[in-house]
Length: 248
Image (cartoon, one colour):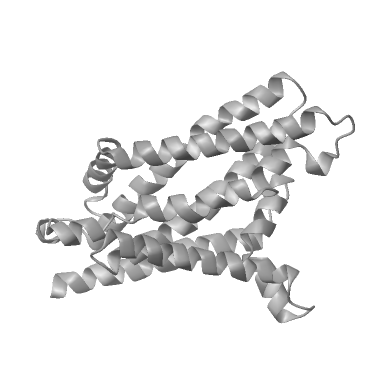
């Protein structure tokens, strides 16, 4: 873990002194603002609301406008982590510095994850607005955000891995987007496949099902294990890849 904090601070600073994070964050918040507005406008004219399908549940799990940012924002944020350093040649001084491989990988990953969290933070004001004009179950809100962060953590880990596999940011973004899309499409299989093992597997990895469960306050430990696996396995592969560069 040696070198974690210097790498983390350098990487986090680099995100917010370049247009990448600001442009991505602005586009993300505009989309989520539209998302929230459409939900509120839809529920404003309704008198009887189901507790399982209120504005919070809809925001976190029942519209495609939640999933689009996850499918595209995560690859954009993570594409430069290693690819840009390898392209520019700055990875070589980093690898010869007295820092550990695990510290380098985790420092970079932590920085992009904190950036991701910062993008979601302003949406907390949406929940405050809902609380001002009606009753709000904050436990459900917290579990909804937990699902968003857990899913994003896995997608960013996949992006970190693909960024380590190429010197091209574009190739890294496309590769991670395809991997994320593949997981997402596999999850949709729970609505397509007949009863059996394949359908159960699809339901287990389904981001849609996880979001819906967490948005209702249902936290399934099996989904948390899957989320942890999607984080740990790509980061382990990334560490091995970076280790191989030291031997070249």
